[in-house]
Length: 132
Image (cartoon, rainbow, N blue to C red):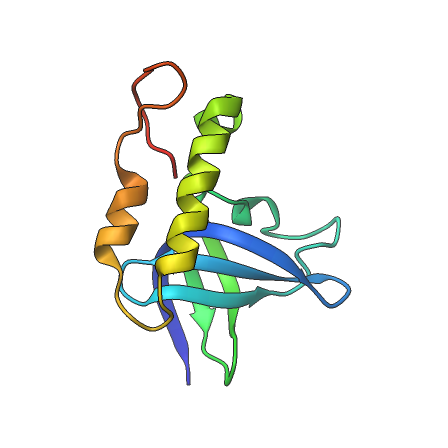
């Protein structure tokens, strides 16, 4: 157990306790990761907005017995263009759900990670950016 730095794409998150949130990340090195972000649901959270779906983040994790704890987050790419177009949100959400269903915890998933990074053709053939 100790500190570990990794990067990943936020697939989803769900409430855990009163103020915490479990965040599911896809890491190219460690596959699907589940980590607790303490106090994220409070209004004065340090990194609550950085852990939204489709966001590519660089995280510092403290390894726990069952779940890791996120101690630091920095955004690599926010992908705001996805959130501005409903067709892109739908396409990205479908891809993220599929990857979440297929990815395994603890197994490297570099190809799946790159699949989410590929430029996307969403909504009427518009090009540019990536889904997540």
